[in-house]
Image 1 (cartoon, helix red, strand yellow):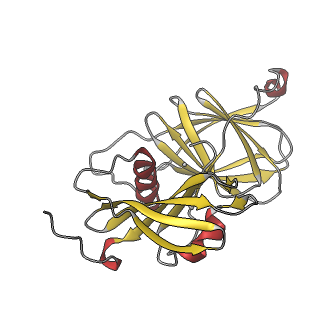
Image 2 (cartoon, rainbow, N blue to C red; image 1 turned 180 degrees about the vertical axis):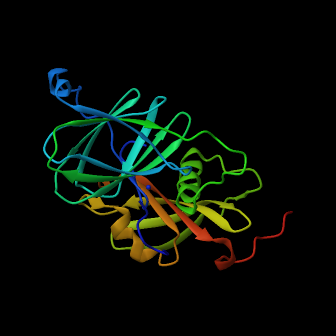
Amino acid sequence: MPGAPLPGSAPNKRTSVLRPDTPLQPSPPDATHATSITRTMTVTEDGAASITLSSAALNRLLFPDAVTSAYTATEALDVIIEGRAVIVSFRATHPADLMVITRGAQYLLRLIPETLPAQTIRLRAPKPESHVTSSYETQLADLIQAGYRRSPPEGFRTERPARPLPPTGALAWYLTLQHRGHRLTIQEYAVANTGALPHPTDPTQLARLFPNARALSSEPLLLQPGAWGRVLVIVDTDTLEPPEPSR
C-alpha cells in the first residue's frame, strides 16, 4: 500500500516494514525459561507464520541459524537477539508484527499475546523448492537492506544525483544515491538536523513526505542537532524522470 508502513532494518533504524531492535541487555536468568512450553512450527514458503505467545512472560523464538537483525513497526514489543534466539516480551495486549532476518532466511511473524505460560517456539522453514519466489513484502524488505548496504541487486543502475530538496522545518534533505531498477527504484536521502532540538525521523512521520513510496526506512529514529541520518525510500520507477544519458 503506497506510503504505508510495512510490516520492515540494523540497529537504530526503522523501516516502513519493520523497526530494528538491538540487544539492550544480557539475557534473563535461565530459570525464566525453565517453565516455558516448547513447540515446533513450520513457516510458510515466504517465511510467514502467526504465533501465540505469553502476554506476560518472556518468550523465546529459536531459528535454524544465527539471527542477524529483527524489525518491528510497533512499540508493543521488546526484542533481544541472542545467537539463534530472539527473546520477545509484550508491552501491550494487541498483536504485533516482527520481521527476523537470519543468515539463511527471512521470517515475517505475526505475534499474538494470550494468557499463556512462557513459550519457546522452534521455527522451521519448509524445504526449498526451485519454483518458490519471494512475496512482495519480502522483496521490498530485501531492497531496503540492499539500499543500506549500498549494494543494489543485479540489473539496477546506480545514479548519483547529489540534488538538494526543499527543507522540511529543521530538516535539510539531499538525494544522494538512486538505484534504478526496471520496476522499482531505491532512493537514498541524506538528511541533516539544522535546528537546535532533536528531531524524530520515524518512518510513520516521514511517510507524508513520500506519498508514492512503496517502502520507507530511516536511520537513526531520532536525529540530534547538527547530526546527519539516512532515509531509504522504494518507489515505482515509472514515477521518476527518465535517467540522464550516459556520457
